[in-house]
Length: 158
Image 1: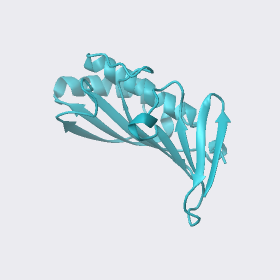
Image 2: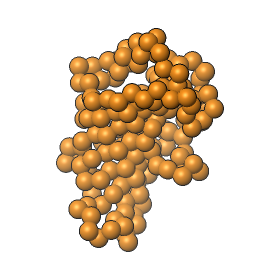
Image 3: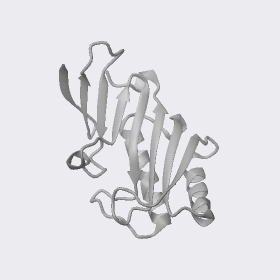
C-alpha cells in the first residue's frame, strides 16, 4: 500500500492505492476552508481516476456552526460544495449528479432549493435525487447535498 501526503495549494490530499488491481490512485481531498471531518470518520471528497465524489455538505460553517434558517443552510451548503469542487480542481459545470436531503420537505423549501440550484449551476442543472428525511446527522441540520463530478484529465492530480 502506498501512502503519500501532498500539499496542493492550501489543500491537504492523501493519495493511496489500497488495491493493486485499481486502475489508478485514490486521492482524499479535505479543504482547510471546511470543518475537519476526520473526528467524525469520513473525508469531504475523494478522487478516483476522473471522478470526484463529494460527501454530503450541510449548512455548517468552517467552525461547524449551523444557522437555524433553512435558506441560510442551503446557501452555506452550496458554498461548501463549491469549496470542495475548487479544492479538487473542478467547477460546478462538471457536476453530473446531486443527492439532496431536506428535513421536513415542503413546496416552500423546494422553491428555495430551486432558486439556489440555479444560482450555483446556472443553465447546467445536474441530475438530482431529492430525499425528504425526518432528520440529518447533526441536531439542527436541515439540508445536505452530495455530488459526483467528472474531472478534466489535465486537472486530476497524479
